[in-house]
Length: 165
Image (tube, rainbow, N blue to C red; front, side, top):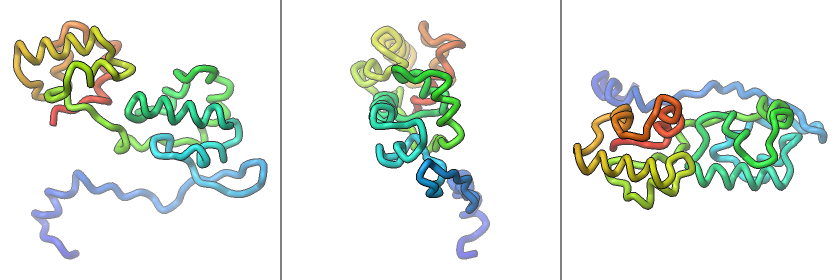
């Protein structure tokens, strides 16, 4: 209403309008709470979910920090002692905000920055850096597939954490 149509078209890809209705649930104390975003939740918010105690709340946040955020709830199964039974109990009360993922710029990141990521490590980081030095900057994230150690299997996991700008 207050911007021109051309300004709106520029801004439209960055606009996200969430539904005002949030699914909610009751915990053992019969208080109603909203779904919890695993990329932004505090320990206290996570512990409101039945099945998540202090141990899992701390480890969800610790692993989130190592990864730079979660791109799917299923990544919680990578946390030590998280089994499919516990995951099935807690997953309906969780959501993932993909916009909260910290991305690494593959064109400017150092070897040390890349190798620290849980899904990249020493060898893949070296492969990405060597390709960049030999062929120049990556134009699109899909270009990382040209690196020797990026496979169809690891590309989906790694690509969520990289950007070219």
